[in-house]
Amino acid sequence: MQNKEILRKKRQELVYLEYIKLINSKENILVGIEVILEKVKMSLSKFIQTLMDYIKENTDDDDYSLIFDTLLEIDNPEEYLKQNHIPGDFLRDNLNNYLLYKRPDILFTNKKLLHTLERLVKYNEKLWQNTLTKEKFKEESLPKIKSFVNEFLSLPYSIERFASAKKISKHFFNVNEGFYVRQLAIHDQVLYKKLTENIILREQTKFENISNDITKILDLINTKNENFDSLDFYQATLYSPIEVMEVADKILDSDNLKKFQIYIGKYKHHSHTNKYTNCNIKNELLKNKFSISLDDNLIETTLEDRTSIINYLDENFIPINSITFLDACKRFYKHELIENKEKVK
Image (cartoon, rainbow, N blue to C red; front, top):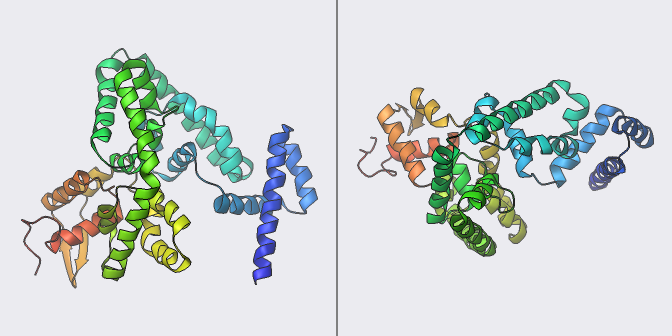
């Protein structure tokens, strides 16, 4: 069994290296793929599946790939683009890299999704051009950017945790090319310098801080076991599940890492795939009925209670998704979230 796994990984690596060699050669990629298929003795579908398996297991996500993934996953990508103000050239310039390096399955075998992405890139370019041509940019957009930046600077949370809670892209804070950073460099040099210096300083202490948080989180898991929930996690750290899991992979032994993956891994995955990751989550949770099962009782939450719960999550910079909202509901009705709520009997 172990030999089969070794052979599988070697096969994946061979396919990936041949593919990267083709990309770097600047040859006609469609012709080159046919040559590779003959060389490795695979059908196109088998080749693409093997290639995708390797990419998923061995490559990291870039900011642009996470945005494209989101556009493919959510129900209303046009609304997402309207809300996030993503520079037109950012998506346009990175679409080819996304297709080549992250989603060759779309490039070669899914013309429908390919056309969808091309359409969304063009749609975003139009949105961006409209944004750039608005005369009220300095009056409206810039103050909002400054407000976001000043709020970030006033808080201890990491960029990824802050952006996740605010439902914006962390790319906007990228020191080299982030939209917020570039706008401040043009319009407010003082705030620009303050932000970039702060980001660099936070990055310098990030690994040590997360390592200490992991110790606290493991203690909580060992103490609470099945009662450990997402709020325990977010209240024990200033970082996102993705950041914490990255450090956990590096410092924990196999037993503790396995435990950590069981309890924390789902939060990392949930932050990218949950159906409530779009900007309308609060409206959805407020306008729709929401019931929970607690101590064998079915509780129909009220609008007033859901509003209080959402406000609590916002105030504590806990990203709102179906997991955190459900955990907060359970605590709320157990009188463990907000003190003036009568305990459910």
